Amino acid sequence: MNDTPIAEEIAALKKERGAVILAHNYQRPEVQDAADFTGDSLELARRAASSDAPVIAFCGVYFMAETAAILNPGKTVLIPDPGAGCPMADMIDGAQLREFKARHPGALAVCYVNSTAEVKAECDICVTSGNAERVMAALPRGREIIFVPDRHLGSHVAGKLGAKYILWPGYCPTHARLSAKRVEEVRAAHPGAPVLVHPECPADVRAAADECLSTGGMCAYARASSAREIIVGTETGILHRLRRENPGKTFIPADDSLVCPNMKKTTLESLRDCLRDMSPRVAVPEETAARARSAIEAMLAAG
Image (tube, rainbow, N blue to C red; front, top):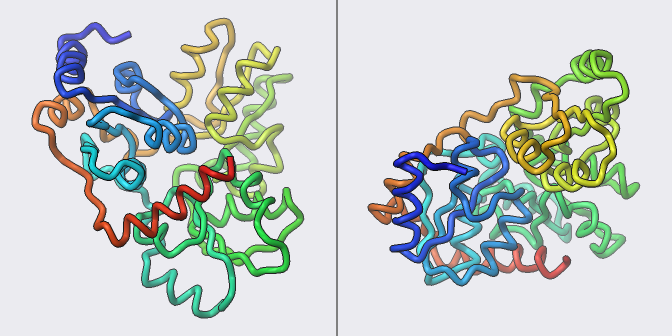
């Protein structure tokens, strides 16, 4: 738990504003500790949708705060650092997706939640890494399916379901740094330790691992596993939660370089300041928000 003066200021401001603080698993440890809830994209989307707090302070990257704003019209959604973007989300925009859809008339458009509001607004349904396989298994058969923006998650789900999708060539630069060679090296150094990787990793990395899971899935695996050592192939911020929730187990990063600079932009100082100033606020134009909301709610309804 945080007991620093800044953490105490945050707690007092949160109470004064009637705010809830949500943080992604990749945030700095001290930011995770200041949050009311820490989770992956699916968990945070669900928590945002069910929140009755008038103010949501979202510690994550911008598309996540946009999703919270879309699901909570009329509430105030704050982001401590609006410059915390997502390179993968920026690899496609609404105009590009419209042109892509025009080349595949009749296709269903599915987007990873790691996308901008304007891209979600062009899609039929969203998915997260935690629910993509389940949601896409329920889609109508016999129709072409466009999947944007992450080619690695798309190919992972396609392989699991024996399907073929039309993939946009986007990717996460952080997860793309992990190599199959590095997975084998760290496995050799820790024999018997299961290797968990994220579905945003390239195909050869996924094939070299024991399990391919969302960060929420990794947390569930760690709680249930009898393994005393677990190798973790995703952004290193997840290690804080894993170690906090499983004090008797050892978690080894597959690669220490798997650090997302955008996820680390949020600090306790910026969280305090946004609650104090009630700014920066995240707003999505209503016409875009309404269409994006339909895609997000379709995902949530799918379970």
